[in-house]
Amino acid sequence: MLMVEAEHLFRSFGTTPALRDASVAVPAGEILAVMGPSGSGKSTLLHCLSGIFTPDSGEIRYDGRRLDTLSESARTALRRTAFGFVFQFGQLVPELTVADNIALPLLLNKVPRRAAYATASAWLDRLELGGLGRRRTGELSGGQAQRVAIARALAISPRVLFADEPTGSLDSVTGAAVMGLLVGLAREEGVTVVLVTHDTRVADHADRRVIVRDGQVFAGYDAEATR
Ligand code: ADP
Ligand code: MG
Image (cartoon, rainbow, N blue to C red; front, side, top):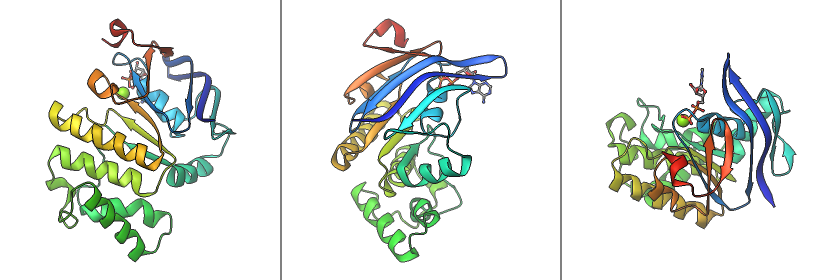
């Protein structure tokens, strides 16, 4: 069964083409690494697959249903309930505490306050961040902040986790630890993962790799194409 599927996506920013006939299919439960040079269209692809952007043309399906033809509000609702997104720099709310940041998407989904904070607390323990719940996220180390961002993305129990260079701002040791955690949790939860990375050690955690080049998606392990 395919969880996420895109066919013949085109997307431009003004006159700059970002996606040019990009197609990709992600089976349920797969961890897919998306690699490729800077500026090749990886982030644009991830934003289209997750419904943040709509493509200029082409089709996107989530769990067999069209995503690109949904209204903005329907896509927002889907993103809140079915998709987790981990951004390169975490994009936590720095003035809020760690627990607030993780509880926020649950509260937006109308989960009662007490239950939302209980879930946040359970994720903090699971990510070995217990005791940091009251800390403001602006005071965390990069590795801690990325773990909080992962907890926040997974707290809603998404069916698909999108991660855009989630370890890009971390040193390699911390990055590898964060990746191991992300992949382990995704496998335990049966989450489908689409992960952008330029780091082959990170991609080694994935089931499969694709390479984005000039707005198109290619299969394979072509080391040359990832430079
Ligand atoms: P990657 O994530 O692989 O580095 P992107 O998807 O961010 O690539 O970008 C693909 C192309 O689209 C690049 O040429 C980039 O400059 C352009 N692009 C991406 N986002 C925007 C934007 N918001 N406005 C204008 N151009 C953009
Ligand atoms: Mg990018």
